[in-house]
Length: 303
Image (cartoon, rainbow, N blue to C red; front, side):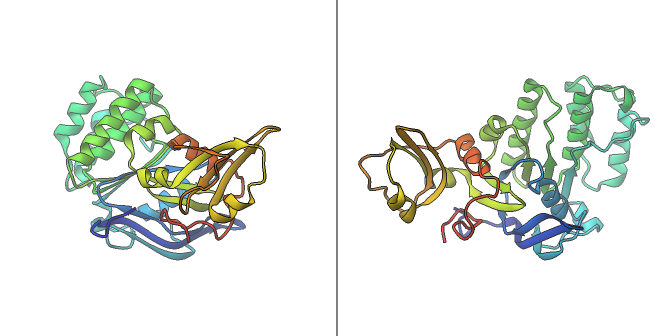
């Protein structure tokens, strides 16, 4: 749960975006407090990239409200100076050298940290004189990440930033990301399918499915609100009446339920177990149409 003293870096209300006949995002209401690393998770086509583009001011909502760092996203220098956005396609100029990208960043960004970006590139063995087109896919991804961090934004929006990195490079980048947030002044919204990496780094979760927000809140709080119940094959109507059923697996002899608790589970036939992040996410994503309408809110609370 978000403490009342938390300052919000991101807040949306009823955010909707359509592309012709396709609804990319529907009624999304989320909050991300400052100083968090928020995992943005969902299947392909769930609306993750659309949400990031709306937060970055690269797209306009069809309806609803969005606030980023206390203002509306816009392609204006005062807004862009505080927001770093790294798109999944890694926007770099293949004919430019690494050093030319660094120089361009210094020219375009008022808070540019040239010493940091050069030090990070040197530690990654990425020479300043190398043309981007001659770099490997992983090196291009690392260069783009370095340039984005060197901007020293207050909000960092990352769309699948570690997908092209090997496990060691992923761990190194995520560790640096955590250090940057710990130093203060940075909030991160990180889209990725790599749940194991996210579990080690993120403390906040936004879960999208079917273009809608299924969960949004502090990861520890969300995990504590859910339980897995394991018991015999039997009628579970009473449990489903008192709690929110997220996912159920029933075999001939056993019933396994992922529930969102509204209080103690009073049924001696079932044994309760804690839920991990992967189990929680897969439980929601296993329902193609999302959880039953009207049963969930988007800030980690039941209605």
